[in-house]
Length: 275
DNA sequence: AGACATGTTGCTCA
DNA sequence: ATGAGCAACATGTC
Image (cartoon, rainbow, N blue to C red; front, side, top):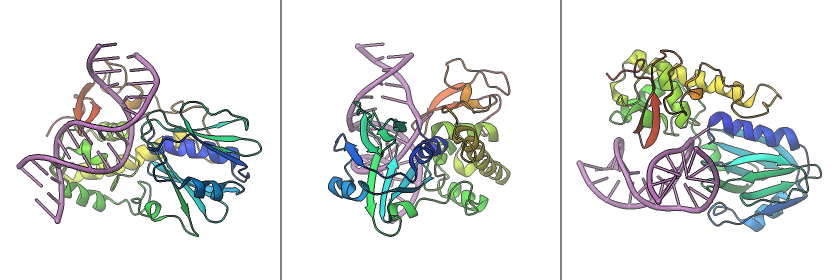
């Protein structure tokens, strides 16, 4: 499920509930897969007794800092989520990590187990965190960088290229379709075939979709929507794409579906034309 | 029953 | 060497 804005929603849920609280217990449901990058005893030593100091999200990953030098990285994969429960929470089948403070249980659950947990100890954030590509909303995410990247990937369909985290951190399947729909670019167009004006539009819509999605899904300031998706604008493709027989909210014509770049892709043929 | 799922990785082939 | 395409991962839901 989680892309850029959903990841921020989950990070904020833990942060608003328990930032500043001390971890008093930790439960793991060990699946070698999810915890494969984790030194479990080190995790326990680092977190239990430490205060949840801060957190940040980037791309589809989150980093939580405990005490001065303990860092917990989380990638939610396809089906992961973070929730908050009472401190006596009894872990359910897919709860793989539970951090308890005096007042809350912070729960990481992931049925499909495509997620990832990493623990790092040291004064600075780990290397895998600092090498995440510049955020879509940062100054370093420039139209020139996008143009150069599209040229390098010129033979791949633009839909597949938008999913590449090395240039478009946080964009996932639905955001990619949303960006292309707004930019009126057919998902099967080869990246190298986009005219400069189209590249600029694509760049601009990447930033717009990221900004609006973050506000709508994760809220502004200290607010947090009650649920994912409640704030998504009615005009977005997102709300029309899932039901078969969906109608484009702009052209009022039927949406099309196909596998492009290995993923189910939805577009509006009346709006997004080939070549 | 079978298809499909908002993600990533590692392999094969050009 | 570089890049494109695809199967695999594990489990739930329609």
